[in-house]
Image 1 (cartoon, helix red, strand yellow):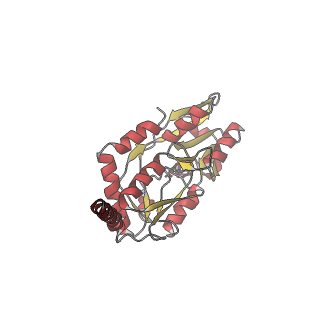
Image 2 (spheres, rainbow, N blue to C red; image 1 turned 120 degrees about the vertical axis):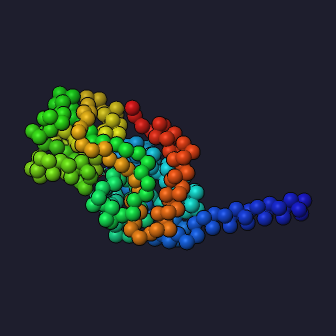
Image 3 (cartoon, rainbow, N blue to C red; image 1 turned 45 degrees about the horizontal axis):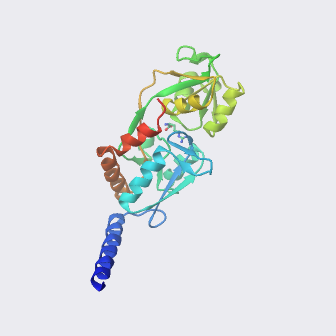
Length: 249
Ligand code: ARG
């Protein structure tokens, strides 16, 4: 009996050593925790369930990554613009919010490897049927600070664009005909269309966009640990399995 107890104790000590060792050398804003900023209006990437809990593809991937590197996952919900800013200012360890890798953003974050690629889509009421061809004549709803916002303003000018803090308010505006369409990531557009009868999505000719997690700049130990864990989850098929589980086709 004593031997069994001793063996158990040794095993427990070894296990705690292993998890300690894996998080060793990683500095985060709160020791032992990985604090991420996110805008949970972006199903299936991140959204809130009936109990206001933040769920989705990215929280699932992050939870698995945190398990591997021995950190506790803490998710702070805010508007997308603020989620970007939090990581840029070192108030969160990373922005995990369906973030597209862009040249400008590379200057302020250390991006992890990419795990999915999407393109922009246009959501409108069926009757409006907005397409890439007639987009220039529309009032375009976007989420502030997103790539959709940047494209719409660059191509059609500020006056054609209405920016909202969340997609929740952007979709309310679309339903109330305050804008005639929303320019946004197609994978998320599909999710909203599936849940809101009367809406359609059309494809665009914008460049494909790579999604990654934006680690607060200069935290190389964290970047490397997250990348290693993410690579493993991609290689063993876990990420693809989660994508298949969450995506509306
Ligand atoms: N992929 C787009 C971008 O990076 C939109 C992301 C919006 N994310 C969100 N959770 N609302 O600009």
